[in-house]
Structures are given as structure tokens and as C-alpha cells.
Length: 483
Image (cartoon, rainbow, N blue to C red; front, side):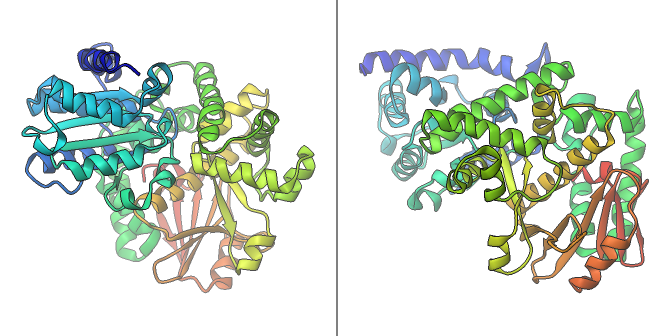
């Protein structure tokens, strides 16, 4: 494309950034609160400005709608308002727009920004520059570009956001330089911070993790004490906390969903699912036109099925397609993080033979698909059970991806087995049973014996507080959702 057009475009983006930051970081005149990922990125920014230049190539992968753009503009405002960085030193670009409307790549835009706007080259930069590249997966060369810029200058701080598949699109050389800060749907702590301005210390999350992975009396006492503090803080709500939590479970774990009608939330989430299929899936792999409807039918099947494993052969038979195509689709959907799999515990042969369980990263996605298809009834306890199990599974998945606890998540393939088996650092297993309604100890006790576990965990809505009875730890599902 004409370099003059690209230069005009870059100047336009620099001029628009101030207004875009206001539009993306406020509800009216009230600024959005900051989520945990914001503070992690802010820490890297501060270190960079203080001379530590190792972590200056960040990627922020995540599902559409989880708030990546908001965090970018909150960082923009931090740089402008608290660090006094001039606006012409902070470039925000939507790579989707850059690619679609200008036919340009990231490297071309960076060359214009450094060479034309700042009239120098990366090697000779004297002041720090910040380049935020949203939806960067629309440029297939993004990781190579990041590696080149990283190597050229220690004065440029890069943030790339995009679909969760970003983590798998990195080339080997770039991967050694990248710092990953994934972003997920909100937990109940973040929800209460953003919606109700109720704050909790992150220590509660750490205490809950210690409870799950240590299970000793000290961790039980610590988590119980902090649970009591949390309950006192929740007295600030102007409605029963159980109703607030149920609303969160059904439709409020995306930041945009905080203050709009439930039906509108579901419409927007359903649109996100369609965009994942139409854009993210096809950016990873090219399918033919007919496969588009097959992908949608696979997603529908996963949303409507009761908890339980799904085999390629079973799904292929139901949809009248080849097991190979179904497996390919499921693999791609996992790369987008729209869904993730939980495999049966056992030998490699058992993992291959037995069905895998699939969960949506957000319970709201499951509810939205059911709503769109007329299969939604919020008073249906079975639906609440499905969404609760999905929530617990997604939080374990998040923990595995971010803090590497647990090392592995499996389900119990035995008849009437527990919902999850968490693999610990010493290769032990922690059985976990999840449910809405009364849960007896039969299944959890059987799993503790079968897998020689020190203790097991029951996560339920009928448990009123954290407690340990014998070798079983009980955690209320609302409490768990603060993790």
C-alpha cells in the first residue's frame, strides 16, 4: 500500500487514542475498576520504565469479550496520566482493521511509527515507545515481527492481544522472548469488584488454592477465617448473596454483561460464539463452506448434552460426519479456548479409547446457546448443576494454565466415579465431586480409597461454609468461585 496512506492512518490512530481510552474504560463518567491482569501488566511497564527490559514483549491471549481491549486502554491511561508519557509515544492499533481496510501488516505500521513519526530507527531510539496491537492474530507474522522488534531495540514495549490460539502460534525464537499474561472470564471476586465495588484481597484466592492442594488443618483454618471475612463484606449487597451469585453463574462472567438485560447478554455471547467460529477458527485452519455448519452443530451438541464424555465416533454418527473431521473440529475449538477437554484418568490406551468430557470456558456461553435454542429454564436445577460443574471445571483449567496447580485435570472413568481428579506435583490425586443439591460421601469416599488419596473435596451449593469432616473437605460453590 502507499506509505503516505499508512502514515496518515498511524497519525489518525495516535489522535484517536485519547477518546478511545475514555470510551473503553468508563461507564458514563465512572472509570471501570482494574482487574488482576491489569496490575500484572502494570508491573511489567513499571519495571521497563525503571530499566529492566526483559519482559517487554507481552502477549495477552483470551476468548473474545473477556476485556482485553479495556485493559489495553487502562494501561494507556496509566502511561498518560500517571507516568506522563506523551501521546505520540503510545500507538494502539487494531490489527483486524489494519489488515482488512489497509491490507497492511504489523511490521509496516511499526516501521512508519518509528521511522516517520519519530524520525529514527529502532536501534537509535532515545525515548521509550509503547505499541499495543489488538486482535494481532489477524497478521500471521505477528510473533516473528515481535521477535524482530524485540531484538532491534530495548526501547520498545510491545503488547499483543488476540484469540487464545496466540499461545500456539508463536515461533520458537519468539517464544523464548515472550511473557504471557492470559485473560479469562471474571470470577465472582472480580464480578463483585466491577459491579458492586466490593473489594477482596487476593490472599483469599491463595488461601483457597492452599486449601485444595494442601488440605491440612492449617489451610482449613486459614481459608475458613477468610471466608468469614468475605461473608461480612458481602453484607454490603442490597439483595441476598445467593441470588447475586446465581445471576453471576447464569450470565455475568463477561465484563460487558454487568449492567444489561439477561436476554441481551445471551444475544451478545451467542454473537461471540459465531465470531469465534467465523473468524478465529478459520484463522487457525481453513475448512470448506460445508464444515461451517458442522462446527456450529458440534458446539450445539456440546452445549445441550448432559455432563458426560463425548467420543468422536458417537458425535460423528450423530452428525453423519467422519470421526476424523469431528476430531479436527474439536481440536480447533480447544485452540480457541471456547471449549476445553477433560480426559479420563488412566493409561494412554484408556485415554484414547474412552470418551472425553468437554466444557465451555464460561458457563454463560453454555447458557446463551441453550437460551438461543429454546432449551433454557433458569429454574431447572439440572441446568444449574450443568453450569456449576462447568464453572468448577473452567476454574481448575484456569489455575492449571496460570499457576500450574493442578498439573493435570482428569475425570474418574470408574462407574459412578467422581467428577474430577486433580494431579498434584508429587503425582498424587485429589478427588473432587461437584453438585447442586445434597451430595452424600459415597462417591468421594470410594475415590479416596481407589486412588489412595489423603483427602477428597466436595464442592456444593448445600454446604454453608468450609469444613473438614474426616478426610473430606466441603467447600460452598459460591466460596470456590472467588478462587
